Amino acid sequence: MSEKRLCPHCGQPLEAWIGPPESGWGELLVCNNNACVYYTGSLNDIRYKDEDNHLGCRYAENPDNGYAPFALLAWLPEV
Image 1 (cartoon, rainbow, N blue to C red):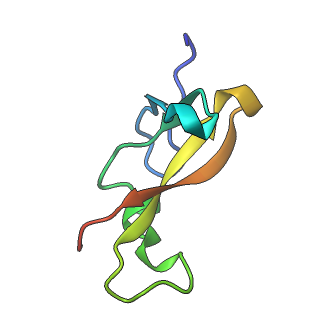
Image 2: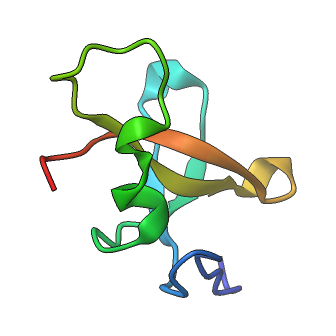
């Protein structure tokens, strides 16, 4: 992939990530910046989860779908 894509929330380059084989995903582009506001602010974005659940989201794009953005579930340590 020659085009460098940036996270619209923090401006950091998105990094290639290969989804698990059973997911059907190919290569995805993910913001791995732990200080990104999308990531740090996502702890409260998921509804109906236990209070002690630390699931959050990372900003991601799918190159196979026209770089459509989506929220990739991720573990979010206490901030």
